[in-house]
Length: 295
Image (cartoon, rainbow, N blue to C red):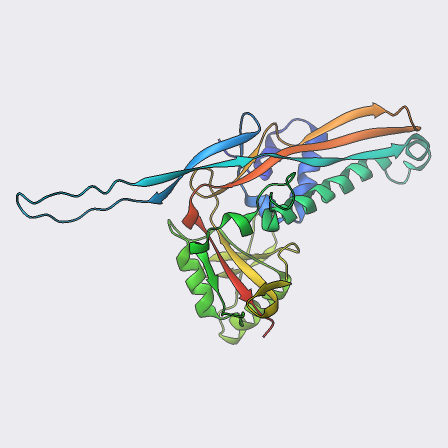
């Protein structure tokens, strides 16, 4: 059964792992809601619908034509994400009266892993970095991409409605965008007197559009190009779900490994390790509006 990291933090009995997970999800609206499924091996082969097939009305004794649904097989590969945190034994012994030096370094390493994951989640491309996984910018097919204009253009509520309509099977779970684009959307909603906020599961205020949470990420770039347009950005409409939407993959979950004392220096090493990936199980579960300009 797919679980979010929020659920995983509640279920684990390892307080150190729990603390790392809580640090990961603290400032990440993506990791707070993205479901993860544990897979065996280093990759997952899955099938997506390409065409639903055809049906028609026929006359009596008419000739029937075949219209079988077609499918495509895809493979999502796990990437190795992590890092080592070394703490000098002298600092750990003499400075931990102020703050536990090892705990501090582990927390900072967890934040670094979050930043690396969110970067790959949005713009990851295994052809550019073969050690990473493909992100939503690459996974979303061209049929689910809407342009704000041939060379980009300003955000409008009509464009946002068109983006939402590209997602089938229900409303998107999130509208993901940059801080700059969120400010533009907020201004549009305030001007149209449709600005609505609601509290999330962590007690924070979240902007809603058509009942869909609007969240920002510092890893959605504002320097994209389209035609002759530059300095552009994108909005992603995302529906989550393992097997029917966008889902995370992992093997073993997030691990905190005590490597122990080092031979080359007077320090102790802790390794954070995550075998992780991403898969889009249904093409029309997500969509992208690209080419959003500053005005």
